[in-house]
Image (cartoon, rainbow, N blue to C red; front, side, top):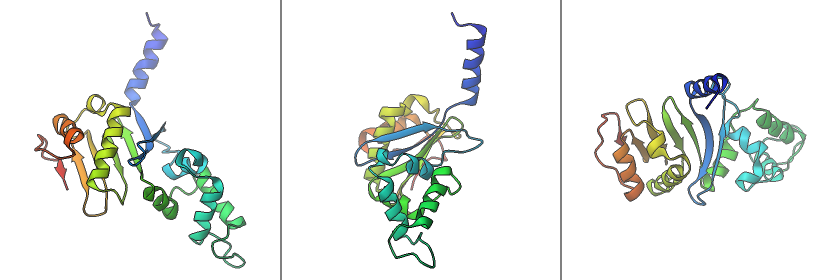
Amino acid sequence: MKTFTQLREQLLDEAAGTNQKGWINYKTKKIVLWNFNKAAGRPWHIQFVSNNPKKFGLTEKKILNILAEAGWIDPKEGKNGVPDAETQKNLEYLKSGVHDQQDELRQHLEGKGWMEFYNESSRGITGGNNRASTKDLHSAAKVLEKVLSVSSSVKFDKFHEVILSGAVGSTRVRIADRFAWKTFLTTGKMVKQKSALAAFR
């Protein structure tokens, strides 16, 4: 039997809900997941990558090269594409969370099949990769189901849904119905949903 203190901690945990961030690779079927403080928001997605490059098939040297090639070098004495002290400083900003975005590093990750996502008790799961096709989103959905048991963990109503976004302006899966989610997992296709808010765009 649980003590009063243990029950209290359980209730507090349940009230706080699940707040997770992660990266999923729809090509390799890998997933990297971590808890985060919703108030603080950290660690950011790019911050996590910068501090854990091996999990994403990267090294710090490779990240520095990506930053240098993107122009993050000394504006006066830097050599194009060659990491220097300015490049290292910008990497440290990413590691500490001072900077929470880095477009070229994100583009590199997306090119390798990585998709960032959120898993939040207050709204469900959201994620995206600007290069992903509908087929890619289907692959990502199957990995999410396997790891997070989405069919049972997401409430699926007008406030809790799964939204996966792909190529800009052309690919988007939005599901707020459990049956529709299970059908998408099986077939990769959408069916009519109960919620008027759910759509396949």
